[in-house]
Length: 131
Image (tube, rainbow, N blue to C red; front, side, top):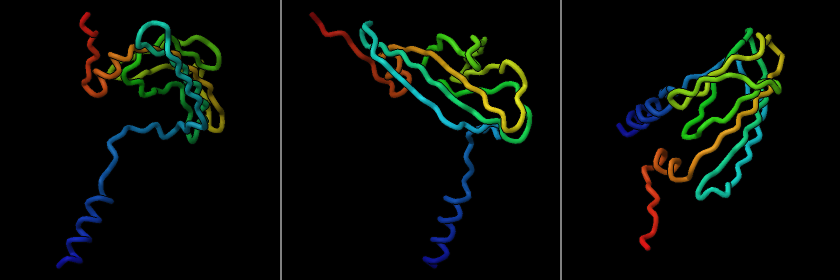
């Protein structure tokens, strides 16, 4: 009886599906993230550089998860590119259609105050000390 319970538990854990929506035609080759504290109290600014390879079908657009940040700019292959930032998703078109085995270079600049990051992520609030 214990053996059956173990198999059921194993099947239920291994059988779970990941609900994360993938972009199967795009493969992230590498990325470089840099973050700096700003002189403005409790603020950060960041830059992420991403190199993606096109896998098995032509692609002309993609999206990135961008939770909790305010996007200041996006570049595709060095060209300033318009984007939509809605529901923590940053969507944009490439400068052209890319085909399998081609690569695309993306750079995103963003910023956020620490208070907004903590509030959005964990529900914390930073309060100013009472003078």
